[in-house]
Length: 157
Length: 84
Image (tube, rainbow over all chains, first blue to last red; front, side):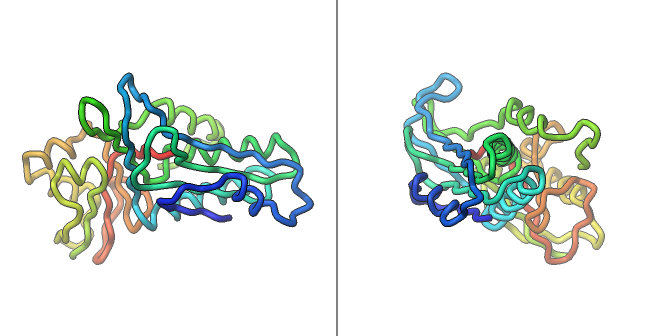
């Protein structure tokens, strides 16, 4: 259940190859890559800085992956998330899941990403022509994460 | 009791510090801590005002204002997360 937070870029092909190496049960790998865009909320973005809460970040990501592995019939999960300085077109995050069939792998991958966006302690600051600003959380991210909550079991807070 | 409070991301910049030691009576809650910080006025009162979205983690676990604090805890205050 590898989780990594790093400043360096990653090679998704190499990461996925390592994730499923030697595992002949695997019939499907679902993956997601998040990338720095050059426009956000209508403004040009020239640079992005990602801050995190070391220690808690890794624990939250591990919890999210563990939950995905109990909810869906999947084998391995991987999250690689970058921090520090990035620029448009750079890769930010990789999520990959191996399983027997695509349906479970797709669902687990999307779940991990939706929960990461609302629970893992990362924060983006972006530079625009108007200056440097912290990115505001989006309600659409909360809605995306809420889709995974069983309506019979409201989340306890 | 004495514990560490961390301020992260936008809150660190708005409050002008990244961490500090805070002393409060035994069995104080997260809500007590927030009240004590707001009582400093200025950006503390503004940034931690009731309507502002402030997340709290104690010993790196998300928690809520009712949680009781213990001596030596690591309390982190931060805005809603925006990773991914």
